[in-house]
Image (cartoon, rainbow, N blue to C red):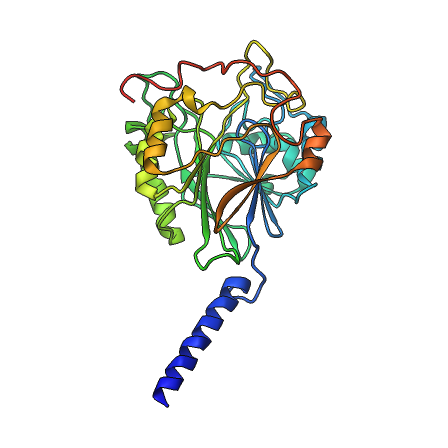
Length: 361
């Protein structure tokens, strides 16, 4: 009789676990996956069940002295996003002409909460959006988007373009990465995704950040703290960049956080001989793994696949089985882009070719 009770007890536990896996502890139906869509530079849209998250959303790259949001371009991008979901939260990694200029218009058109550096929130207020709709970040915040989706803010670091450069914050903009944790029906453990819209490696990752006279933890320690708070033992997806010296980041991040898939981004912003950033043109230079041989070889040795975008509005599904490309015909049709592959514009060279890795990396 005791043996039978143990069997039934184990069966009941298994059934209960399956119920929690499919519905969550609160009884709500869990999303089956994370749908990820990239639309240039570091623009990402994540649809997780009924929850939509936007990162940056820069539709027109503008480095002029006083760039202004472009209403029509944001309206068009929002229409494309809404072919696949919606936006409930807007995240901004840092304030630059290729990241945060359109954020006030996104906030105005969606009415959703923005989480961003203080400089971006100031621009949002100046644009006429209520101050309460933009939360200025310091790092370490936890954003409970829904019962199933949590975003943890990680104080990060801006890219260092020069091979000998170094930054600890005093000469850089405030930069934040985001650890997105999503409970799904596919497995008991939540999915874990870390995305940053800029970044550097080596000692830049291990040196405490200094901003406005305040010393914060190092980027690597800040991510480690966010992972611990999430109860995460590995990163299913790392979406990183930026445009140079990614291998110096990978050598630290991949082993420390057991990265399973790397998705490079921050592509398309720099003009080349063929074109400049324009969503209707298509990605004007390809991401070529052989242009970063050190990164290519390191990731192969580590068994971490690279999954780069090929064109704007490329989309993937991310679940317990990994990352897989999916069709995104409605959004691409709005921009005149092919369903698969680059175009319609002619691609040229990477404007940073030859400067993506440095001696000693």
